[in-house]
Image 1: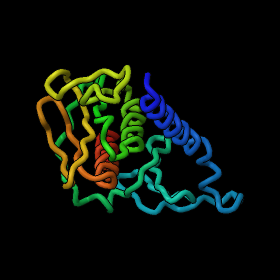
Image 2: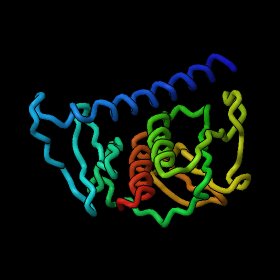
Image 3: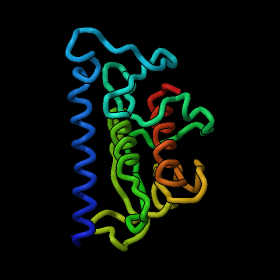
Image 4: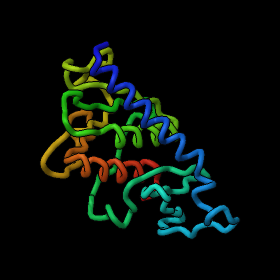
Length: 187
């Protein structure tokens, strides 16, 4: 494993730990300066409540589990997506390790949601360059793949066996929240 690959693995692990820390301290976040008064939800959709945290992100209460997101449903309502059909048992999350666009956080959010839904997740690369020991696949190689693809325009579309999330770093973050909320059945 090269230094670049090792760095990528450390970044993914740091993001994973951050998600766990956010979820672990959520009780404290939703109390007003240590009082027993709960903070009211900032938005409600289909019975699910969304809260803003002190860290500037939002969480949705999904059956007692707090899921971190960056965008409320009202902020991403203009993004249209089709029904998502994934193999319920296993999904590849595909990315280009040579890209300058950081997809670590969006990738981690989708991986966490798929795991909550009981789906096994595996990382895969689009190219061998800077990929290390992670498998290299193409959209027509495997059955269920979500690809995080850098681009100049926000798009979500199907390509062979891939559900492609394409755009800038901010766009991919928006798309991952939209897909995550769709996978959870909230939208």
